[in-house]
Image 1 (spheres, rainbow, N blue to C red):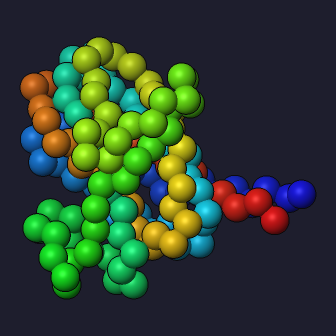
Image 2 (image 1 turned 135 degrees about the horizontal axis):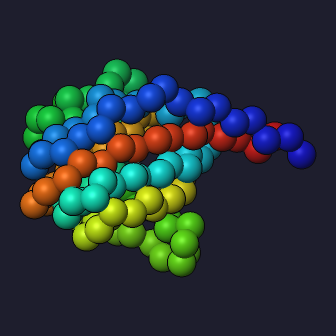
Length: 131
């Protein structure tokens, strides 16, 4: 079995309420792994959104029939706990967390700060397929 891995482009740090990354194309991958690195003052929640749309949705606008996306569940590598999409991933300290997410059928994902007190988070993303 061969594993095809691609480290996707650098993602700038985000750190304000409703700050969001650009949509990241994941249509060529079955799964992704990602890390979220919080800084020393990190107190916030990150929600991961996915979309089946052919064109990248506007993740900053409301979801609708013409702007299709939703929060997705992520699996924590540390304790294998599922993080419900609507709940998000909470940070309360300087930490690095790693997750996997099935993106089979999805075309785009984005990371959004959905609750915020302080700090920044830097996401990194790797897509992969097993063949």
